[in-house]
Image 1 (cartoon, helix red, strand yellow):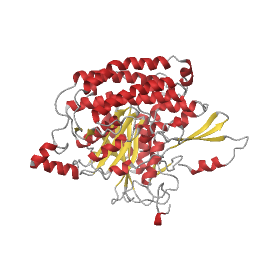
Image 2 (image 1 turned 45 degrees about the vertical axis):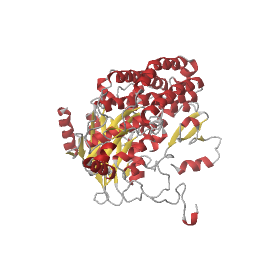
Image 3 (image 1 turned 180 degrees about the vertical axis):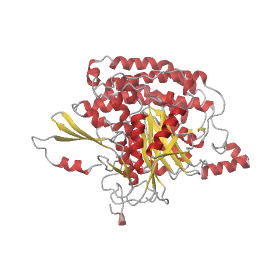
Image 4 (image 1 turned 120 degrees about the vertical axis):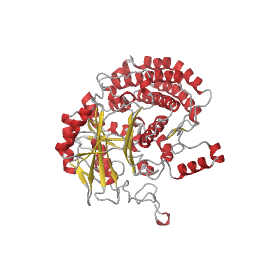
Length: 163
Length: 402
């Protein structure tokens, strides 16, 4: 296992990612946005991380960069997981898509766009998936209100009880 | 949900071009509210666009304003065919974040919960699959067995569907008296009932022709598309979190991982049938070895103290108050835990900033990820194969849309 860790560290150093401490001892890395694809490609092609477990994001509302997108890759043969975090910010946060490397990322990236408004560059069909087309806002952002209703929502009651 | 498709639907099809057929969201074979937009060339599917999200309830957003205890009932509504297994997965994930190890009796009871859910979920999956391709008897026989499991679950947790039986740090309550006897009676008679259903289907000519060589998924495709559970194993990948990432006390049970050979709908059906048999084996062993002792962590900062001592003791009162109002104090950081649920890997990703509320909770829903492969395996098939393929993928929209 330590051999694999050394290989991971070497791949990370080559791509420009850096290892971080993890609460429960997982292999976790932080990569700058431009290092993501080289790092993931290296992991997939050379180290056998052929399975994508999840893609999602976290909104650190008051920080800049505001969002942290996280990927979890798995090697089925070696039974090992790796987590990669990439911080993205700005008015229109954007990060590279890995859906050409892992088809499984397709819907999860769409979900992340839908829920957080993080764009995935190179995604073939970046549309909303859980909310409907035309919905405004990104519900999992911390500044999206938890209560209240929006025009267009099923069951919306406007002023004077008008639907 | 794409509006582009709707526009195409409004336009009458020209003789030379493909016809668009809308299937769902209320189609019976879509097992919930999945909508498929099929582009047809005669009877052959040229393109399939799954549309999901009709059952979205923003569970992840809700979880951010709740303590760990409070979210348990929401998991009943994820994969609503296996609520107990979801409860277990959530509690295990929370314990993984909190760094808690639960007592052996709680582990054994949770294993019973998981395996009962697995049997009942596979029975429904199989029954509905069989009915969709025309085998009514199999459906009724599966439901007869399922009813017995629901009676057991009712005895165990007090509710048939909305169980909410686990808590971070253990269980809501110990097993009621006489439960193990009822369960052993079920385990005794169940294998012969599975065999009955198998006899109806496995060599049934109609069944075989409707499912064999349909919906092929190769090993590489299954892995690349992130399939988990019986769908991944049906394609011949030996991957089961119960053995590969041991949790609870699964390593101490003797059971096997059934895998398929070619990865068609028939293989996935066989894998599910075999899994039910393996689950019965696990249940039998769990009944035999059932350890005694407490079912909750003996740490008042994790699990609620007994009500009788709360009413009499100062310390317990304080702990109860803090746990209910502020929740367990989670360490800051990230954690991920995946459990082998009937549909696949149900994972919970937690991001904590400390305190009793998760800063972010992501649910890796197996049905959501599994459904992505539909366009690939439906392409080029006949429209009548859609129901067989959907049945063999065995998804639940409550979990898919969250």
